Length: 200
Image (cartoon, rainbow, N blue to C red; front, side):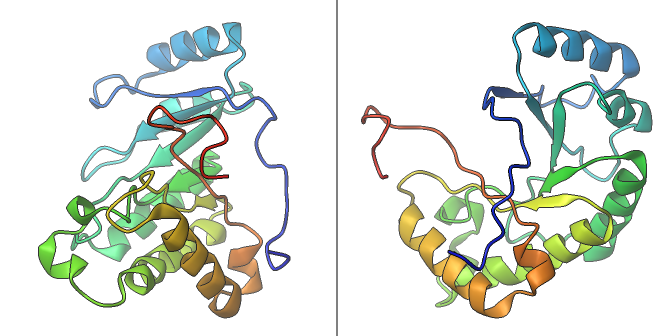
């Protein structure tokens, strides 16, 4: 869509990894260890899950600045979570000051299990997700952080390509240019045994 700014934000190398799921490895020593290992194999990004109710330590985030590795913080909240927007704003304010450049709020919004039965059965599930995402995106942008659109589960309970198409059309007509020009799309690269071009 020509409404969306085409910007090469990430390195052309698509190799990256997800970090440990526990929150015991967020120290400077671990950061330097994994930066070295990731650089050895020419990986360019690392996704880390934000711990519940606290920030990732400053020394861990700052260790990645200038390392050649893009750090992505995934808040990975449940879509029906009642967590305060102010808590997220506080964390993004801090992370922005520490130099974080990329953040993601949700995963798999096209799965029933991400919502729960009550929320899922509402008619406008794409719109509900977009409203949540756009608020998150605005806070990210205020803090010089690029918001990453929620990756969709391939196939899914709500077909992923239909969910994405409806989302992009709505974003193009309703979101501000500032939001549109800063969104990064993401995807799970699973093929479920199909060819690499499946779904293209």
